[in-house]
Image: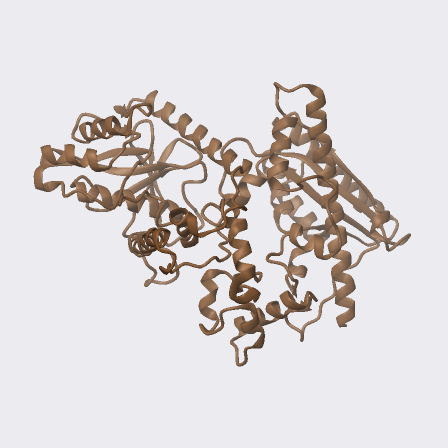
Length: 576
């Protein structure tokens, strides 16, 4: 059986359900996912733009006809791989037919690979050996090509339109990208066409250059003993093959065992967030061990962290009853108790905390156009990501301690332009400055609350992206203002264990007794509504409906932060 390039990346339970679907009740399977569809559309559009740029450049390219049958594609790929007069092959398709064609010309040099099928976006000729072209795989991604914060690895940049090197920088390509490239590399090696130095590359969201890496030197983890991409790929590929084989056997024999178990996988692209089986697995995790619950239901307890918990502790009930635990397991035990009692507790009972209180409290929450996609892939930058809506709530606590008396409103502009974003952010920035000035002139304290670092990131973006425009602060001035007045609610929330799987505001607000009024409130629906609000081919009433939905959704986000803060204050007082 041949396996595709993502095989080593997939969750084992995903593979289990894919290859033994008859052993599961798949009524909760997600058949339509607008976020996953949009993510794929953006990737396809970016790939098409990159391919167009290659075709318009000076490099010698050849594209395998994407409309041809797979057999014809493979025959044409074999022919292209044997040529030395082209620089780039687009859309190669390498499987059994291609290998058979290559063997006719290369003889024993081409061993073939019955385990893999490879369809790299781009193959770049990086040399010749005995008159045979040597090809390095390159994938096109709509996120950043590499993480420049990683200083222990390097990437070599090459101009895509001329194939000339430009510079070498500290950085590392994404792990999932590296494992896909490793798949292609091992396949090409079995064909006798791969570079000996394991060179492979990524064309990222800028679409202008290749970031080359050497997979045997690209390490993931800490220290010199950290494994390289090739080692990780081999281990994960072997595990995946085992799961697939076991699943195929179980599909025919219900008594056969599969070494996979439904767990909460935090990875966005290949984890639960974008998985069609996530609701099926959630049901299994809750039913695990006679409804005791699987450990990864607990916030911060990931599959990778299970090694910190003794192996005989399998369920949430097991953990709650265990003794003599390490610090991590002891903290997880509090989460286990809270999961079952539904009563929040301090994670460190010896350290209480006071959530800051002010005379005037402002809550803020923005909506940006690609937020839902970035929940899947944080590096996603294809297209223009901009703020189109900013909600706020102003609560004068000297008049009433009830947050429901707050004035809640928003600024919005659906022009889908840089000028539209500037208007929204400028209005919000000026409101915050004015409210601070007003409070301090009245000798009142004031604090501006937000949930997680998202808001701060966008104010820095505001200072950089719109620098020099009227009313825009310098980045230093924005930082100073935020340091003085902003309060991130999330770190306070994370001092407490809640009966939730995560610390997202969407997870915590229901615990605080708050519910969104908007139907299907969430990132997926907000993305669809934004697309409707900015569409040029829809009637105005449809656009107005989408705008009103987004406005109410955002205002409820503000109310949710008020509700969660009020709830945290109330339970923290009971512990003091």
